[in-house]
Amino acid sequence: MDYLLQGMFGEKSLTKVVALFPDQAGAEAMIGRLLRLPGMEPSQVRLLSRQDLRTHRADLFGRKMEPEQRGIFHTAFRAHLVTGFAGFALGLVLYAYLMSTGHPMMTSSPLLAFIAIVGFATTFGLLVGGLITIRPDHVRVIAKTRSALRAGQWALVVHPTDSHQTQLAQELLEGSGASTVMRTL
Figure 1 (cartoon, rainbow, N blue to C red):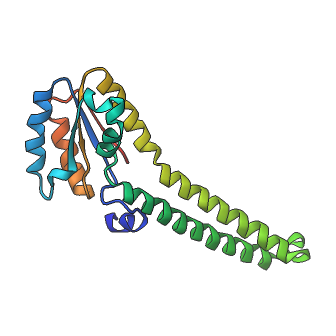
Figure 2 (cartoon, one colour):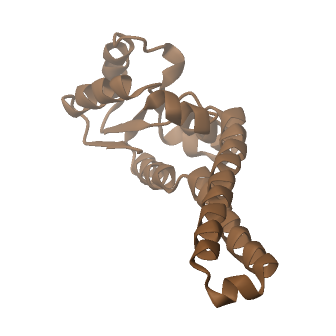
Figure 3 (cartoon, one colour):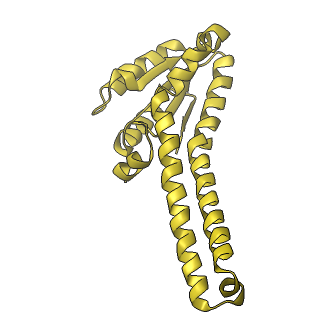
């Protein structure tokens, strides 16, 4: 399943696991434990503090939360391409089905029916691609992380590359002294 998702998304890490800690020492202690997980690299673990929210460091906060900026562009392109094509294909199937039923609206104006059905199906497919691109699950986690940092907490952000790493990181963080553990889809 991970392989299929990687084909649609341009990012290596599709999931974020965020743990909020009341103090720096607890968060830093977890970094070493996370880096001992199989396949986990130092670039996949980021520590955030209140300092990262300052306006002159706002770009740094964005890069720590979403480190694969180029991958996000590829995700947008691939998601729209795949879902737009899927919408087009489903529109063709629906058009063929409706034509085979001999419905009078379809047979009286087949070209307009084709344009309407396939056009709307393609448009809805592209809208789904846009929904995939904006990643509403990421927005929720990022907003909660920002408010926790403003309150003086420390955030440990993990960018696992597959579902196994995600499960291990989440289990490890839930068993730590973190006040909250969140993850994206």
